[in-house]
Length: 140
Image 1 (tube, rainbow, N blue to C red):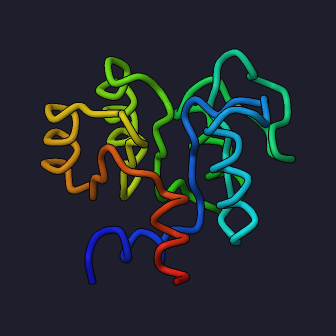
Image 2: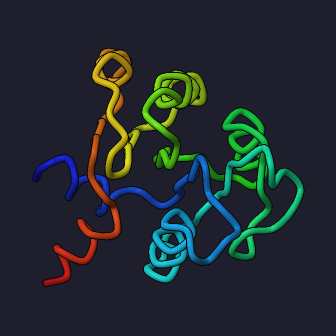
């Protein structure tokens, strides 16, 4: 089983960093699709802190999202990064701190150094790829 199949088969909770409340944005469409496929989406966007996106409470940062998920009896399995590449390192480092199993950097998001740090910490990393596209590919 390759890493993408492993992620899609085992992940239940996805924290989406940079999730927009604007339905025209890719982050919103991808997250809505993944939610419709049975994954729990946790929005992480400081501009939307305290509001709801896709019916879920939004958090200012991964630490707050992780703490809230823990209080609800779950954990963040995957951190999906919808931020520019220069912010991917900090997000990846936060994913390590909260104990996520995987980091997924969406299309156009590339940070080899951040990916290496995450891998060294034991996280699976997908970079410059779209989780929606990969999910649809598997469905045939």
